[in-house]
View 1 (tube, one colour):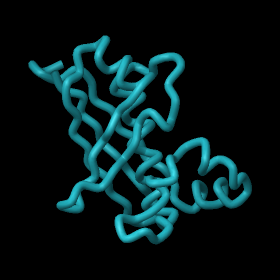
View 2 (cartoon, one colour):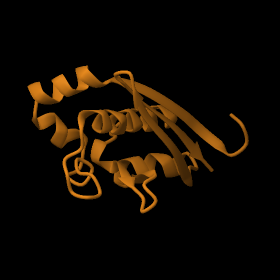
View 3 (cartoon, rainbow, N blue to C red):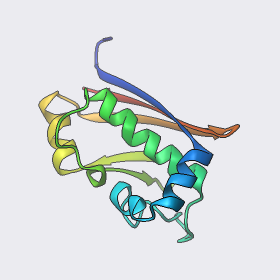
View 4 (tube, rainbow, N blue to C red):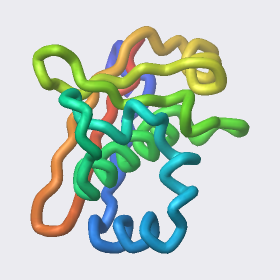
Length: 125
């Protein structure tokens, strides 16, 4: 890894398949996302493309950390900064795994187009 980079993660999610899974199993949204993550900054429910991108981000974080055992999906949140930029916020199991590997900051990029949602994550010292 380049100096300062602890891990890199990338994930892609088929938006229609993800939406169908959430529709078929409504409780899954509660397991994957905090109530705040399911809403836009203005308080409206997020669309399936946005949720799929956020799920891809959580998967990318797991990959950047080497898929640590015991990760709780709620301990890795995607929040929206005042600028509109998505940011990762870690707590409990994910924060502990990151600290054990020397991670002090994160970079996140989300995108969705042509039926695919994608996320790239850098875990940095």
